[in-house]
Amino acid sequence: MSKLSKDILGRIKKENITPISRWRFVVLHAILWILVTLAVVFGSMAMSVIFRVIDGADWEIARQVGKNSFHSFALILPYIWIAVLGLIIFLASKLFEHTKKGYRYGHFVVAASSVVISVVFGAGLYFVGVGDTVHAALSNNVPTYAQWEENRDKMMVAPDRGALVGRITEFKSDDEIVLVDLKGNVWEVDISNAEIQQESMLRARMPIGVIGGKTSENTFNAKRIVPWRPDKKPPIAPQQLRGKNIKRPI
Image (cartoon, rainbow, N blue to C red; front, side):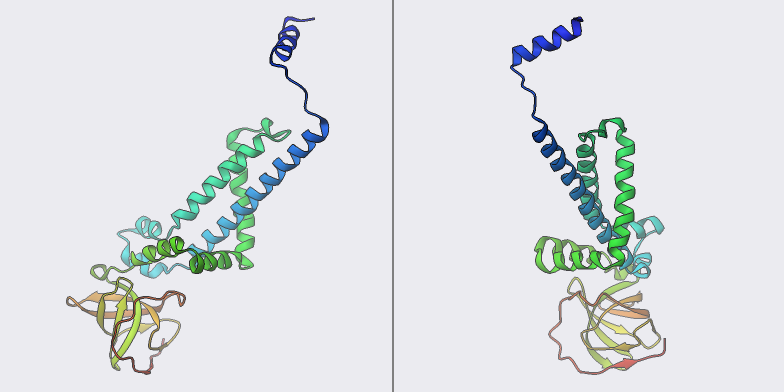
């Protein structure tokens, strides 16, 4: 008997180590694979929400607010979901390494494979609407998540850089509207020369993004108006709303 075999037997006797029965090993291995699968599923769901947030972002407003292209892209990124995805990929990689043949693969290969799988399946889940469903459910039922989303949107309110996001509260005339931005500030917006994108009908309480220029402390000259996400509800000013619509050619 070799010295190594003697050392192993000696340790077994000393520490009173008993072998794991086959059925117990099979059950533990099955549980491990279930956890790996769940990690992949949750990672794909997180990726689908990332796709949803990025695709649903208003890039035109972001470009106006951002100091450069990189800063504009950074304003759009859903960091909370990127952090969640990173944690899930880390856990999935660690779990996979403990499977029967997982030790054969390097850390980088396992992590990179987890990212690729999350991106591929996440794209599929996004296209069937899972990203929208998860995002809406969290926004409507988890106050902390809703607050994060609100704070993220508030970064798009930058009148000094020529961008406003808020809700129409009053039509003062065919050429002027009152808007309350996401931070609760009231603006009189001149829309006489504004180009209105997509939805050509402006309505009371309609959420919009405005690109233009600040003309005074509470007045703004609009050059372009784009629809904002309809599920957002900026503060409403106490002004009396008139059920008036303004329609302009796109």
